[in-house]
Image 1 (cartoon, rainbow over the protein chains, first blue to last red):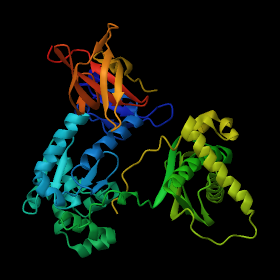
Image 2: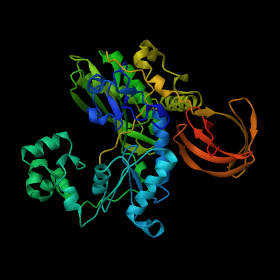
Image 3: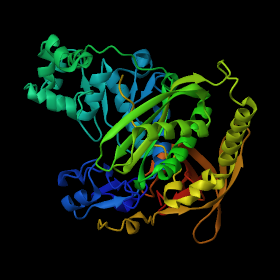
Image 4: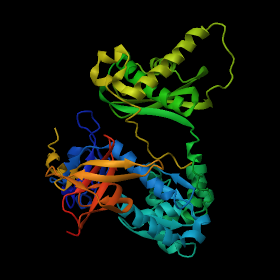
Length: 395
Length: 98
């Protein structure tokens, strides 16, 4: 909207590519909301609800750039900035109150600065814990500050629907309503033993969250980089029907995962694959490697082995993903195997670094494996640069 | 197949004018614009940089470092914006305070 003033005042949504089968609404503006256009809706459904809807393609580079600029403003107020996805962050300003005033004053200043410097509006929630701060930011939009204090949270938060609470997803919501728990207040006043019986450990968390007793700290800058896993997944431009199709996409994803791990100085001991078939049934499988790796070929081989063991191609696959977990720093010691050709492995490692270098200098498609070209549609994925970072789980 | 309204006509931006700028890069990292070429093809000398701060241009659509410059008796905004191509200078077509 900022970059295209002619779109202002019209119902606009960002939509994925229909041809590449990412045809859903990724974001929509306030003008599109009254029509019932929702994030995650299929494009055709959104267009049915709002015939004048203008659907623009995503510009991930620009999104990243604005996300960086936004975070850099936040860092002016505190070193404790913990991102929650690309467009939300928690900021602990406890130590900055003497410098900049109270929480609301800081929130208002941040809002004004973001509006002036980036040309976009933000909503801020000010509170004494992360759960209520996030809730507060969702209460009044698009350009407002909501304060939730210890003495008024019962009036402000408790009447809200349970689904508004962080941690209550669709499944939890369905289960809660089965037990006639409709509001956040209902969760807060519910017997914690009951919640535990219904939801296990998560029930205790929900009770803590609803009562404003969450004490999790806002991560210091840099701490968020403590990576637990590196993964990539994609909805393929066409359904995958055999091992060769899957191999092309897995190799592509493995290259991205391996390169990102090398950038982070990490290697994985466990490989996990996620598969979703054309009926949207999803499952994951994992395997532990004999030794940690950041070589894409080894990740891909492990993924293919898991695939062959667990999927018999009764149904085609719509989306697949690969993830390296159980990460250890590059250079960690491990037991060498007498059955493996160490020199060959070292050459493979050097090759991967050389490919990284070529791609950094000349772009991703400057060098590709030849078999990627056997299906240009599947092979054209640039998983690393197009990697979308979704909010990580809260815990 | 989804019948999508063509978004392209809405993406034009008549107010945003990318300009060639002669600039001085100081050793402390600052960039000082010296002159720019307007759409009439004339090069205009910047007499003074009055202010520089991060700002968005709602008129032209963009965000970056905004220089307030004096050109003769007029003041204008000159934006240095980073995008896919690199850092580019742009101006709003209607000069403020004119």
